[in-house]
Length: 318
Figure 1 (cartoon, rainbow, N blue to C red):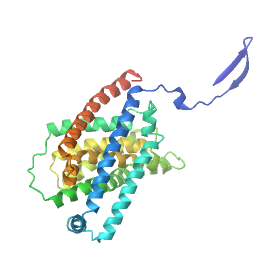
Figure 2: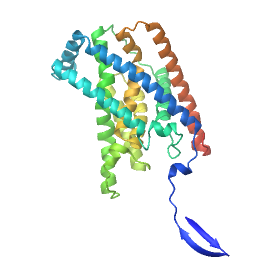
Figure 3: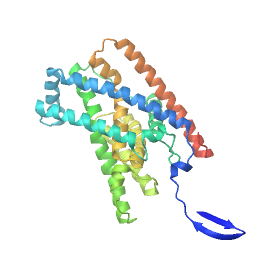
Figure 4: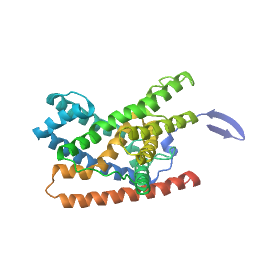
């Protein structure tokens, strides 16, 4: 609102609309997060595409994987269909990464520019804090079931499933069907909002109590699904904790943002396996780099937790 006064008389009243980012103070910490996360994702994309290229270059692994889908998931699949689906998934995940970078609400480009005042967490902060928190939960509530020595083919199947299929399927079920779609329906019929379905793709700015309840329900369902899917009970706590951050990212940035979050998480968690499968020439050096990367991510989680707390309780712009 602008009021022009001359000789103690109001001569004009008007409204001047300013872009919200113009008034928002930039956060140097968030800029650093955005740059680092972009670099980490580029590194992970290189590792992932190398993993996929390795699989598709080995006919024996293609044969095993097509049979494994029928044996483990009861999904019949020919080799040509498997190769086609793999390429489609690769393009879809790369497209989701691009969407995350350009997302107006929770995008890495916005982080690099230092914005995000309205949100408790940016994408990077949510990722680093959840990674650090999960590390603590694993330490406090470890998975104690012994693992049998698996063949290379079985390792490849689980690595492929975790990095290519699980992020898409699990986010479609637990974040879209259990969280975003119910919220879109609520926004449509309770708040009479037009284009409420865009919540599924773009997320929303303001979260109400019902949104938070649905976030908790979807996260708990995600945790329990791991238990009923064969994991031991301690996995429920880890998966539920992760589900809270996946749901938060979905609420803020839409389903593609949470798919990217999940993909990044699973790739980072299986990097050691991927390097082992590829059999890189400089494997010891790469493993050293991965170990250093884990330490950096955990350290960033500690810093993000502290700065987010300061930002929330002191209203600062760190």
